[in-house]
Image (cartoon, rainbow, N blue to C red; front, side, top):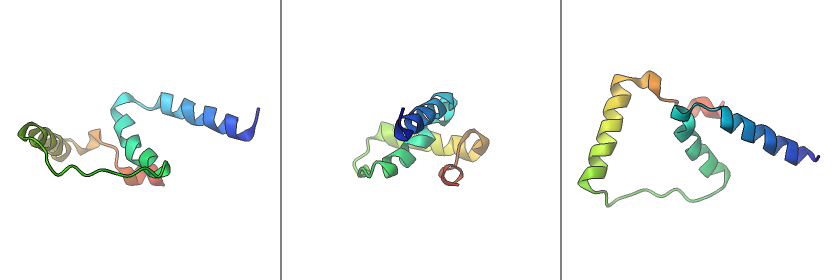
Length: 74
C-alpha cells in the first residue's frame, strides 16, 4: 500500500468520524484545497434570504453549535 493510499484512507476515516452537524464546516476548506471556484449568489429569493437570516440568528443565539473555519485551519 502506498503512502498516498494510506493517507487517503486516514482522511476518509476522519471525515466519517466528524459529527453530522460539523460536516458543513468542512466544505469551504475542501473547496479551497481542490482549487475550485467559490460562487457568491447575488440573486437570492426571499425564501433564501429568510433561510440565511435564520442561520445568522441561530449563530447569534447559539454560537457554540457552530465550528469556526479558523479552528479547522490550525
